[in-house]
Image 1 (cartoon, helix red, strand yellow):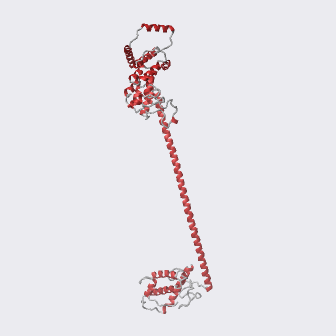
Image 2 (cartoon, helix red, strand yellow; image 1 turned 60 degrees about the vertical axis):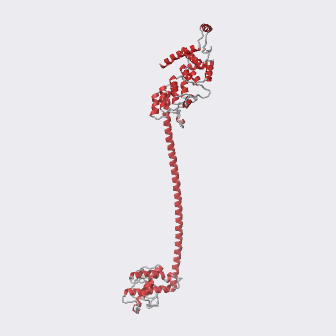
Image 3 (cartoon, one colour; image 1 turned 120 degrees about the vertical axis):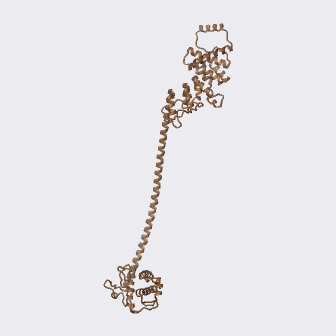
Length: 475
């Protein structure tokens, strides 16, 4: 190795160190630069050898400078140290070689690790040893001699490169395999995430369906319970059990309005009513329970205008059944001439309040209807014609149920009321029932002997009779 004398300051610049750096720092820096600039690491760089030698010389200068303070920056080194320094350099070259070849196992005298061996880069120089010489001066038997011809060295380098190329191929294969595995892992993660998403959606759907079923069952149970309570109240009303009706409405919160069957609760009705449109107020009016009618009205039973299956309001039902007290309640609380009262008294087509009153066979109800102007002249004429006919009398008699003296008296009173308010004359058919010929002749003779009364006398007589009946009825 030829020497080109380098000053200490130049050596510091070559190594990239500042003056005053320690020996350990020098060795560490030299190791890095030598490994980077070695010719075997740079086969395509012609200047690699020269650069490596320059770095090595700079290291030698600084090492001597740090080990021997007597040297100065401008002083050249004595050849006294050349042999020993050359040996140290050769030991480091062997370390570098073994680092590249992967065979270093023992510590270097420079502290770089690995066992120093003879280097194929040695030979020549002031030391005069080569790969075929013995161990360097100053080293013991731990050094192993390397007897290697140039051909063997070339072959070993070739094999080393082949191993490196094979290792590179394996590295690439491993990298490709790793990449493929990562792709498979990502795909599996996506599939698992999608499956989790689908499972969550299915679970949510199943939960929603279950909640819907539970809610539906809950609603059905509530409807069934409500309908059961309502049917019980209606059954109590039909049986005349007023206390149970009041309890159901007041305590069980049963709505006093509307028919028996709640909306959407047809399937929960045990016994379907004959008239689903019939309300509690209709039932109370049909039974003639004035107190119940009044109680329902004060507890939100706003059904005075509600129609049953026949189109009748509770007032019509009371008229048809001849319940004087209930009829009076409606007439006292609702004005037929008022807008709110029209719906209470208005009858459906082809029907008549006066005819309903006549069918009740209760003169007091007939009087209330006539006196309240609920029948006009055309209705009076129609009802007179009907009741004085055989068909009309048959219907009235059928509703009365028995041909008794009281029945005949009430019938006569109703005819008198019609004559009074309609101005009709007595007719031979006012009231007819089967009679024997002798009875007919006797009646004819009696009619000839009794003088007819004037209209004013008839009205006076009827008013007196009505007053007696009304007084009797109130009692």
